[in-house]
Length: 275
Image 1 (cartoon, rainbow, N blue to C red):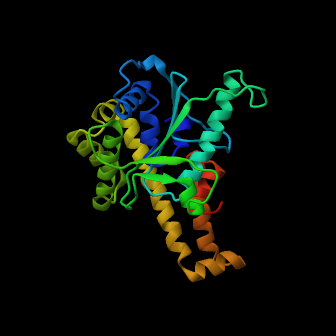
Image 2 (cartoon, helix red, strand yellow):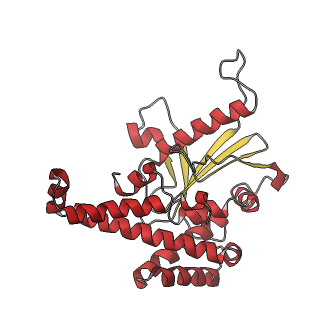
Image 3 (cartoon, rainbow, N blue to C red):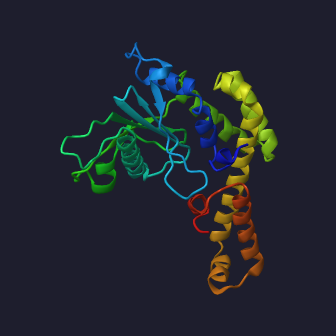
């Protein structure tokens, strides 16, 4: 896998890799806007914020359609209560880049022209969430002059995002059955293709998909081990007082392995809490 791929996390790696193909981005747009019969693949301009070698803002998918509609999409397998805030960051950064790339300036005496935003989160977890979330509601009880609304896509269906959700559900099922990560990855691909979840993509990228799922398995194992250690009072005291060297070494090994896989310090901190 490329360095860019290894820097991404979990099942979202499949999501991000899937939408490096503009044809899948086009398919997603057509499913969300079937009324737009004139749009073509050439009208899709991918604007995903990427962070590979530096610690900075990055998101899963962003694209502009005909310079009139900006769509930002995030994939979440574990519900993030800060998703509306994160989307605010992504929107601001994408607009900043768009203004610069289009030769406009926010300091101009005339109003800049911006594509209308649409914000989505593709959620594959089990927590009960609504069809839409609001920055104002989530953070200020609805009492805020600033608000953005994010639509939640969470159903398994024949759409490209619905198939991705189905794929994630299969992976979660197989994790409970297989302790061996390779077998878990292989069975996830086999069952997903059998059920018609991302079949064309998975059959074409079988080796890469297995590797990405193995990365997820390793990542989640490390996180689980750290969470167990955190619940151990002696471990906490040992970490604070510089004792329990054996456990500290195991913790350091977790961080080292994540760094070897290409994770940035920010990603490691998000994953296990500290670096």
